Image (cartoon, rainbow, N blue to C red):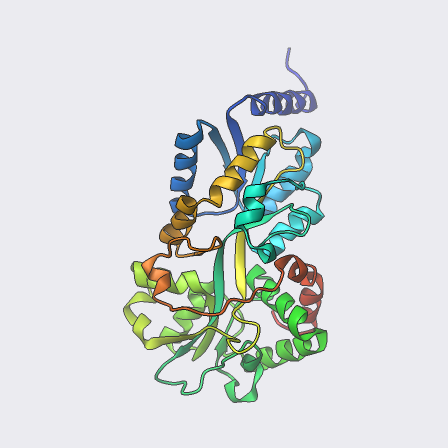
Length: 338
């Protein structure tokens, strides 16, 4: 006799939950799509004997899945990219507060949630890039991007992009909503084209001559030095870069991080994995494998990212910045930033 679809689904969830509670397992929901992360998983399994069961997908899809699963969710841990998504998971009740002396010691306070529901483990700096042959005086701050002298020169991603949302949220935190509105209006006026594509496409825009100035995360550019990126690597020496606001708050940092799921059946294993991500070995993997900046002081930096040079990073609380994201989206909409 066949069970109804509802009964079958309930049985499946119960089976997953029972299996998830078995000792030595960790159920990881991850929206990090990097093949190089495999080294993190296999190294942790070898060190601890804990088997990682992975479900990968886009952040919104994974979060929707966790919400649908509710208290029966087998998820132990959510890994994702950008503060906005981590804060979104927290606000949706998908994460829980944890106690970890290791994480408190190693992760800088500004890179963790105020309630210890999420922690950052790698960073990317949001940098201003420019055509060295065409731009003699590049913008030195994010606010400079809105100056009339750069009219028609700027390539930048859409307002729905999480990196831009967090950047504008940080501008609100540092300079206030009125300054943020003026900035958004000014950047829209200075766009060389309507927002399109990803961060690499903004860099390709400089190579193609569509724009002279662009904004992108550091690891997209560093990757073009480390390996061949079509439409970028062959002309990468023509591109200069600026770490913005070095005489003020410093360069904005995007975060990749994670938190323990609200109903984690293997909570202790989830915490162990987060603590592993803060280890020197894992921090070096983040940098060498994906051209990211470690968050732990003294961790080894990959040559591809070290090539960009030393800089002052913005040390604002990203937990505080995340609270400005709804207002940032409103400002984008009012500015007509597509």
